[in-house]
Image (cartoon, rainbow, N blue to C red):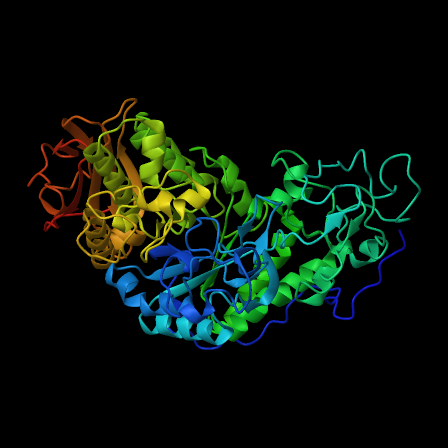
Length: 613
């Protein structure tokens, strides 16, 4: 294959962004990441504010437009206008930030015949510069951001650098079939289609050398497969440089392990060659532009672990620099490093090696699941928080770590409990799910609540099965399941305020706002054990050092148990649940907690108190 020419709008070879004088920060932008309470929403499934954009301006059936509100894998009609109209609902629960699923223009439909689904979720991007027409327009996104800021809400965009939509095909692979991964050892950059192929890319030193001079020698992308862009899709992607196969790895499908986890196609999506300095410059330019134009407050970055560390080491400082210049001094960046394990050592490496300020706390999710769905001992939680020292910045940095108990990929927490404990009674399921959210909102970190949890949504699985509609749904597999804490189903709109989970989340967000210790205060583990039962921590006011004791019972039986507490503590005030009025002895508090119960106790000041022990 002959060398492919560079496109006219290829990104500049260098990726550095120019520093500018910082603009004055608004009260919203001035807030640090620690202490935020985040509501995560998929725009397509939240509220339909304009039915005229349901088909994204496309004509034809669902395989053309992607719109089929009765199919869980297609667009349902939610949009930015609807989300804007529901901001008071989000604000009313006490949230301080909104994480919005990707809004970029997607390939409407992809997949082999009979396996098609739509890009309603936002992760199959073709145009990185425009809002998907199914969701609205760039102007409507600007209006959404302005409306959120007017309510004191930050806006976190969900972005992707690892891949684009599936456009590039391989000559050796029939359309609609998978392409087995071809390794760098068996298919080196220096030979065409394998070790015995003709010599190509003379002088290219491999992807470890990210210099412009080295990548100038990579001219033929046909080392593992012969990539091509199908007729009619030559300019499917924007910016146009993304249409050149030279900017992709082109090694076949990832199995998410070893080398192919970084260099393989994620479920067939075109895997971007992020080691290439031109790609780095291009992605920096794309996402810097969204900051400059819309003044968003942060980025959640998808599939972070599948991208080389050098890319993040260039990208993250560039985003922070641009944001400072736009008056956003505390621009929040957190990466998705998906791994179901309560040991936070794996995800912590991305804060040290790759330069991530924060990562989504999959370890927290796994630990809460372990103690509430799998009946593990509460020492799992103690070990989790002991591991906070592993993050860059240690325990202080962990205070801003985005924690969660469920999301659009792993499934809702109530489903996970049902999966781990088949046949569980509805009342038991509600109690465990409720306690999971109490933990989420009172333990260290910036909690992320997945939309619909407050309405008791369960689901029959993960991924598509966990992406229910907040408006009246037409999906049979959503509507056949009652919601937790109510007799309603997803067949009707669910923005009510009477669900017990809604009440729990709203009240605890109010406590976080009134008591900074619960939002961003230092945390000290107090009580835990090898079996289900007591887990307790102290949180300390960041300004005064005043102590708050937070305790949980993870067992199905009431407990009478002692926990340590600061030795100066004498009297306590109940903020959540029923706390003892006084300590049992200096340094010891005896608690009576019902099954799956919890308390938040404020240590009352005394004249001789020296808080913070």
